[in-house]
Image (cartoon, rainbow, N blue to C red; front, top):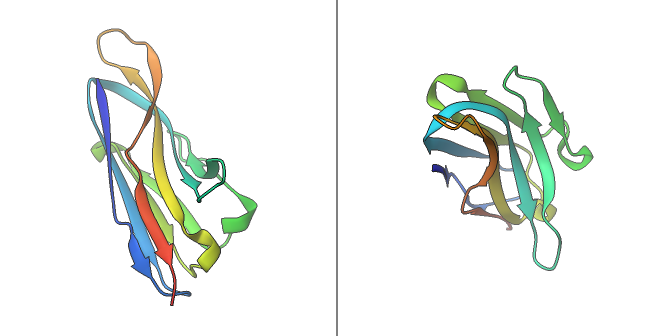
Length: 121
């Protein structure tokens, strides 16, 4: 089994910054893509940013220039640096990882439990 544990959410004023972290642990052989998704009330979960094991990134248009995704492969951790936050960024943010399990060498998608980000004055 693999666990993803997120941290770093909270309440911030418009224009402020937050950094989310997501650490993977368990039966990990390798981690392929890692990403962040968000889900606002009454909306579907949507991609925010994704990063491959080689460091290639892709962002939702709404966050380009404001958010940065990066990872520390030695720590099996992915981060989301969120700057210039707007009220419309308010959502639960979920970490996602495509993990090849140690032993079976089968890949699965795993999700974190979610962390609330609220942008409000």
